[in-house]
Amino acid sequence: MMEQLHDSPAIVGWVIFNEGWGEWNRVETGQIADQVKAADPSRVVNAHSGVNCCDSKGDSGKGDILDHHDYGNNDPAFPDATRAAMDGEHGGFTLRTPGHLWPGAPTVIYSGVADKAALTAKYVENTQTFYLAAARAELSGSVYTQITDVENELNGFWTYDRRVLKVDPGPVREINLRVVAAGAAAGEDATYPGHGRWPLDEGSGTLGQDADGDSDVTLYGNTAWTAGVRGQALRFDGNGDFAETAGPVLDTRGDHSISAWVTLDRLPGNYATAVSQDGRQTENPFYLQYGQGAFAFSEPGGHRARYVVTPQLGRWYHLVGVRAGNELRLYVDGQRVGVTTAGPVTVSTGPLAIGRAKYAGSNTDYWAGAVDEVQAFGRALSDSEVSALYTSVPR
Image 1 (cartoon, rainbow, N blue to C red):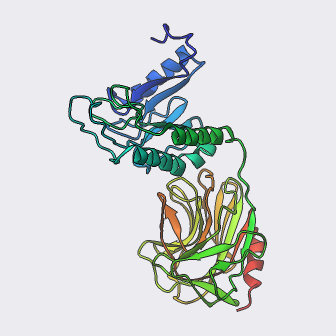
Image 2 (spheres, helix red, strand yellow):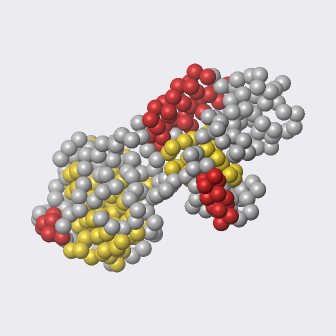
Image 3 (cartoon, rainbow, N blue to C red):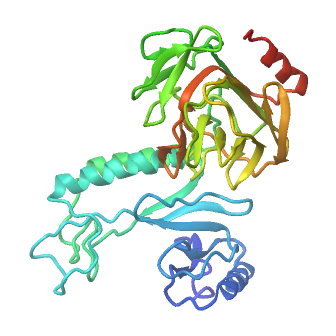
C-alpha cells in the first residue's frame, strides 16, 4: 500500500493501529512504526491512534504523534519531547434520522440529542470548550468521531446513506475555521505579567487588587475578609472558597517564585493548597500547599520540596516556593527547609488561584484558614531575598 500510494498528495501521514484493534504487542507496535518511518521519512507516522483507549497495549513511545481518543473530554493528549499531540477521536453525539438508518439496531449511543439544532449546538459548544484554546497551545490536531453515521453508530454529520446533513453547516464551519486559525497562531506566546503582589487589605467587596499590576483577584464562594498578618487577609472555610486572577501571572516554563502568609484552621485529610496556577494538564504547574504531614512546594509527577511539621492551628507561617533551573525549593519563615529535583516544565494557561488547587480539570484541595500578602515573581528568589520578605512583615 505504501509503495502504491507513495506519490499521492492526499496522503499526509500513516496510522498503524487504531485503539486495541488488531494490536498484539506494544514493543512490536513501536518496531513497526520505526519501519514505516524508514520506508517513508517524508510523512508523519502515528504509531497508535487512541493509544489511551479500548484495549490498547500501551504507548510504545514511537512515531511522530501522541494520539488520544478523548470521548469524554477527560483524557487529552499532550506533546512530549519528540511527538506532537493529537486528539484522534472525540465527541459522539447521537441523532436518529428515521428513513436514513442502517437496518440494524444502534449499539453505541454516546450522548443523545433531540434534533438538528441540538446536534449543531452540542458540536459547537464541545469544540469551543475543549479544542479552541488547546489548538493554540499544545494540540496539533483534533478529529470529530464520525463524518457519517455508520453501522451501529449514529454520531455522524451525515446520515448513513449520505442523503441528509444532520447539522447546520454554517455554525459548524465557523467554529472549525476558528480552530484552524487558533492552530495557525500557535507559535505566538501568551502574555504573562511575570509579577504580582496582593496585600489583600481591602476588607470588603469581591476584589483583591494587584498592587504591582492589573492581575486583580476575584473572590468566589464564601470567601471572607479577616484580620491578617498585616492589615486584612482572606479567610477560606475549605468548602469551595477561593480567589483567582483572570489569567496566568507567571510563565512556569522558566524560573519563578511564589510567596504567601498562611494560617490553618484545621489539618487537611490529604492536601490543602494556599496558592496555585492552572494549566490544562491533569496537574497544575505548581502548588504551594500543606498535606500528608508537611508544607510543600509541589509540581506534577510527585515532585515536592517538603518540610515535615505539624503546624500550630491559627499561627501565621510564611511560605515561599521557588523553581530555580532543575531545582525546587521550599522556605518556611525565611529559612530554606526543603529541596528536590524539579520535573519537566509545564505551561500555565489559567488563573493564579488563592485557596484552591485544580486536578483533572476540577477545583479541589481547598484551603481552610487565612491567606495574606501573596506575591509572585518571574524569577528565582535567593535565600537572602526570601529572608528579607519574611522580615519585612512585622508581627
